[in-house]
Image (cartoon, rainbow over all chains, first blue to last red; front, side, top):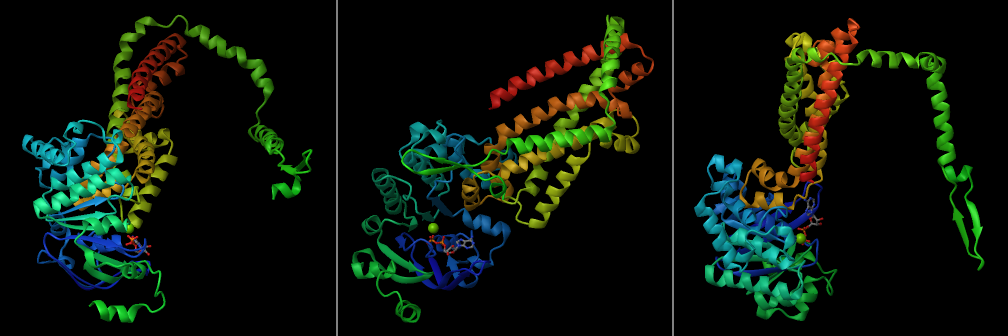
Amino acid sequence: MIEFIDVHKTYTNEVKALHAINLKIEQGEFVAIIGLSGAGKSTLLRCINRMHDITKGKLIVNNIDVATLKGKEIRRFRRKIGMIFQSFNLVTRTTVLKNVLVSFVPDAPLWRKWTGVFSKQHKFQALTALDKVGILDKAYVRVDQLSGGQQQRVSLARTLAQHPDIILADEPIASLDPVTSKQVMDDLKDINQNMEMTILMNIHHVEVALEYADRIIGVRKGEIVYDGKAADVTQDILDDIYGGKREDMETIEQEEAYV
Amino acid sequence: MYDKIFRPKKMVLPNGKIVLEKRSKTPLILLVLIISIYYSIQLTNFEISIIKDRWNEFFVIVWEMLPPNWQYTSKLWEALLDTIKMSLLGSGIGALAAIPVAMLASVNIMTNKVIAIASKVLLSLLRTLPTLVSALIATFIFGLGTTAGTVAIFLFTLAYVGKLLYEQIENVDMDAFEAMEAIGMTRIQAFRYAVIPQILPNYLSTSLFCFEGNVRYAAILGYVGAGGIGLILNENLGWRDYSSVGMILLLLVVTVFLIETVSEHFRKKLM
Ligand SMILES: Nc1ncnc2c1ncn2[C@@H]1O[C@H](COP(=O)(O)OP(=O)(O)O)[C@@H](O)[C@H]1O
Ligand SMILES: [Mg+2]
């Protein structure tokens, strides 16, 4: 379970990225976070795995108070949270298999960490993960020779190899065409349903979000302005999230409405 | 500014449109160059007449080097090997040491700005120090001999490879690094798996290139007592034993040529 209790995040340059966030996400949910760019979606995701520190409030993930973790504890905590990115964030000069194997580095013995020589068992697990996302045949191909859709699947395999409880996805289909987008979304849905992983996704494409997610969270200027079932989202709600309509009425009302 | 003094040339096309062509800066640059060359000649007391009168002395020495003193070769091997060992060891250790220093100097890896800037300054300072001078200093610390030469070459390699390396590290794509940190790696592990694959070919190539140059440097380090073949070269020049000097130079040319050919071959493969 992920729980935000009155969470604030201000960057060192005084940018207020998150404001009074209250949120509760149960294990196994498929949640899409929508909102304009700059609204604070990426910040919200990155607070969950402590890539960013929150500045106020409490954030509890799987019964752990995230802000209290230090050094090694943070790294152990991150092992249970997978992350995929808009630009895939792979090492493009090496093979697909090596990109998945990095998942095992934190748990490997010291000499393996440095040499990058992995055990048979880890290779087996990495290949299994690649098989799960349907690109086993590309295992020994260099990543820079794959299409965008295939690269996103490699990054998905890398995350699966971690066996996380939660997958954070920051605009995973933003640089893909509609067809490959659908494949990646189908993969994610499949993972969510068959492996009971929580999926928390930032996404630009509202129609895709409504189609795949069970729950939609609308973020505007660092605040949650909608949180509810995907089926209940109306055009008015979308206008509100994307700041079309009631631009001036702002903060106070909404804070009360969604606590 | 320049355009205000030298007005752009106006060109009117048949349909009345006006194009302004900026004046070329080449004549001005040429003028500045000629003036500075003139003053450098004055300042250094350079005299063309000396070159005219004494250029044949060069050929006198070259003639005396021929034929080279072949018997002398047997006495040279050890010094030549010393020279190669000095450059190989100095370059190898220097290139390895450059990695951690370059990491400390890269602002994207080192979050502490003070350490990053201090490391950069250290590398610049080391680079301004001519190898011959650092060799001289090293002889005071380590005594005469190859250790001093090795240290001098180590320092130069560290500075040279370190500088090029941190520039590369700072230009690396940090996306994969972020992913590695999210997986639960330490920053050093993330560097190993996300940054090293991106910089490795270039790093090896730079190190080899530096090694090539170091063989040549190493040959003259003997002049300040830092060991190797330069020591013997200096001696023989002192005795005006030009046929031995010829043998030394021949051996050096062949060695340097061989090393550069091999190194170039590998560098091409890396690219
Ligand atoms: N590392 C950072 N340092 C300072 N400001 C940041 C940083 N990351 C994001 N911001 C700012 O925080 C706000 C929210 O950004 P972000 O979470 O990336 O929004 P989104 O993902 O919804 O586009 C923006 O105003 C952005 O400029
Ligand atoms: Mg974003």
